[in-house]
Image (cartoon, rainbow, N blue to C red; front, side):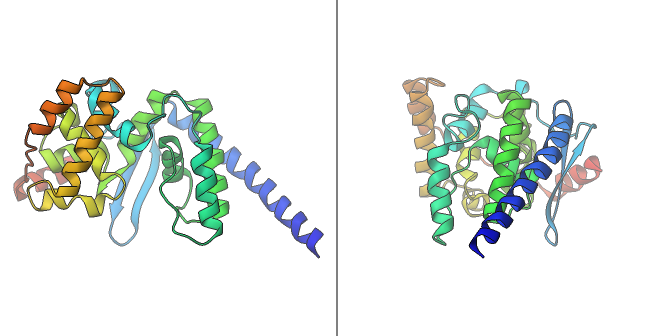
Length: 259
């Protein structure tokens, strides 16, 4: 009985690897020069579709200030440019917690997060994790780190219904992503672990204590990593962060402009 169970699990895992691997390779090939169209509704959630047409809201990595996306990398995945897509130490912890039925911590790298968003259904199971890991390896082998990062910045959630850094820049600061400064980048980085919860600062028009502390920590990490100097980090901490609230005319114009 046990042998049959083990054999069944082995066959299932093998079929999963082959199927997901083939499917992921085909989709990743489209991502070399293609784009991701993101749509959202409260009823159905978020939907990602690969497209050859560049969305109007797409932000090119080369057009962003380096410190803006560096703030996000420092916060989400410090070793992004060094590892092969998977942090095996964090993965081991996550799998143990999943096995023990605990709430799994956010242990995914940027590449894993991108793979999860584009290639899995988001459920928390071993099978989903296997799919995610396979897709991550394929992503890392097929695409450059810069391409992976650009895709990531354009598909992740920065607040309820706010997907992509261009949409986030316009929502929180009423400007293009290419116009964001270092502290605004640190603010967006602060949101990412739980954007619906941490966007409270925007709703209240001022930074919460948690937001300010987290942004300052991100700036300190950026100084350690030499993205900015210690003096710049100290100066940025002293600068206020101004939020812009769009009026209804802006929202209507943006809606029809995106159709």
